[in-house]
Length: 135
Image 1 (tube, helix red, strand yellow):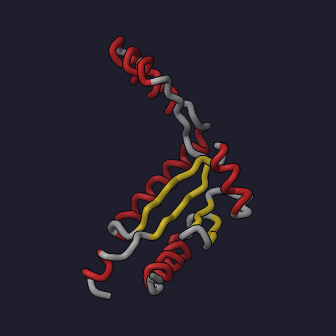
Image 2 (image 1 turned 45 degrees about the horizontal axis):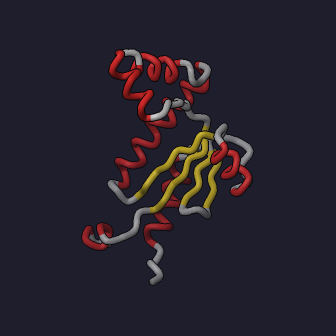
Image 3 (image 1 turned 90 degrees about the horizontal axis):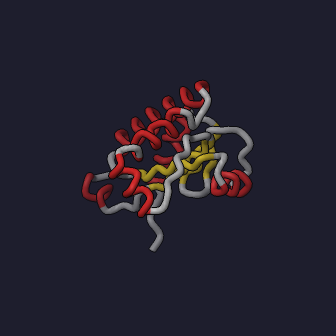
């Protein structure tokens, strides 16, 4: 496939359902006030630091590196969205895709892979990228 053909292709959507740190924000006015007083960033840094227990934080760091490597490998041909498994959206997606273990990778809303096995996920993505685009 030529480079010009790849540039015109629609990126493949990849969703990763995993336990992810969650940060809560206040209303825009309160956030601005907290930033102006100088405590807003400190509050958000503290939330991020304690959002996950150490073992899940380590797993999330590894997942982040995996996602970064995946997006670099495909150079704009994939769009990756990480969904917190403990969120309402994560709960819904877990039901929808019948996922019980995390992380789970959903490629193009159809193909499911439990874990972050790079070869399996790349094969699913490559199959979607090589499939003819229906008009």
